Amino acid sequence: MVAGGKLTLSGKNKYSGMTEVAAGAELHVTGSLTGDVSVSGLLVVDGEVSGEVMVKEGGTLTGSGKVGTVTVAEGGKADPMKTR
Figure (cartoon, helix red, strand yellow):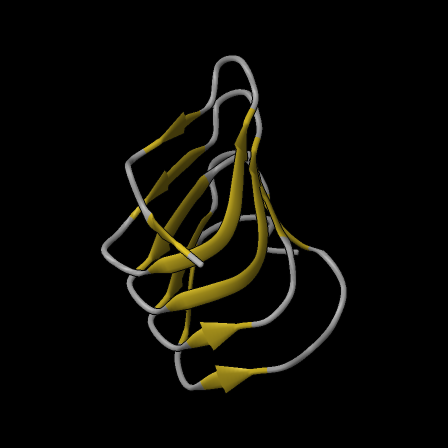
């Protein structure tokens, strides 16, 4: 879980399980991430997230990379992304 601050993931990351980005936190993926991501803060994908990205109320998805699938809850925001 990214509970606060900013975290950048570069290179290939193969850990399993859900990655959570809390409100007020930022995760920047410049490499690849295979798992799912739940976003209440900010997720910037300039690399690739293979799993599902779930943008919750108050969350934002942006970037120039690729994602597996995107689900946006009411109150969440997602820029158009390349999907697999």
